[in-house]
Length: 389
Image (cartoon, rainbow, N blue to C red; front, top):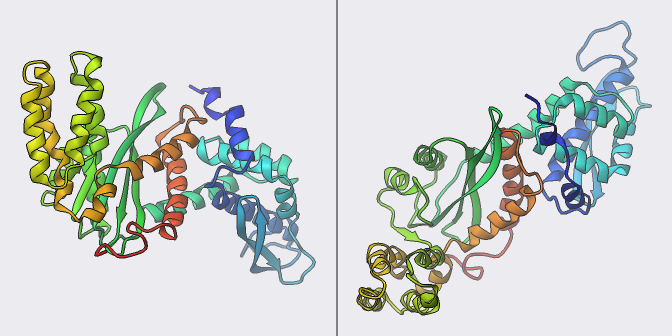
């Protein structure tokens, strides 16, 4: 069954894209225009590359790089050449003049899984020439190959590993379901922040987490001193199976939020929050544990469920005390990863419901690939020093 709304651009998405906020689009723009220019050369020569035909009007002669400044930044295109000269693809200039509309088209094509037939019609209008469904599919495959290569690139030593999960609406077999989007970031021994990987799946939580973590390990991830995450469903068992010997820091921010579910009355919220903050801000583990025991006794009668929850869970937020004081503020929560996820959500919310898992993975991967490149040249974990600072 076809769902028309799956493939339409919302006004919010068009506004977001056309004002240049969609940072993952440059690679998409490069791939599509390269494909269109290649098709234009084939039409000019009346023959595809390496094709023998009596109608051939010349010979292909490779590609020449051309750097173009756009609102999306500098993009290097591969301009097709003809040995006999006299050819220059008009698609490049036309495409750049129609850049804003093309950005929206690319988003619709690559992000929402638009049918190649629909993209073919829009491409003809924008670029002034016909491009086949096969060529559009080829351009899509090139982008997917680039993103897959990034997702599967080799990893190295990471001192700290951050894990988080969020959910996107995906249509599956005519039903809208929640697909888990798992994201991992890390900090190298030199203090560099990196986005390590992403996975999208409708599968059962524990199996998804285990496959994701094992994938990171298979790509060479090693040297982890601490895993920082919230207590996501299925993550605990998967983490123990793959990184069983690595200490775990449960996100203190989420722990404090979780405590609210065990309050007998909301009037206690500020008092309980202050008690928990005092534990997390203690100078060492011994002081934090003493404050925890005092809180367990304090609420044993007035809030027995809270008291039991504190005793069972809160110490999972104390692992940070075993690490250098200079690092604790950053490794006690998943806030750095939460910020990345908020930015992803800002971009994906205008899509609404993804037509399939592949479309969701494509967009999130492109955004994270862009984020990864920015973080590797951005602010270091410890003021520009190594983790021995």
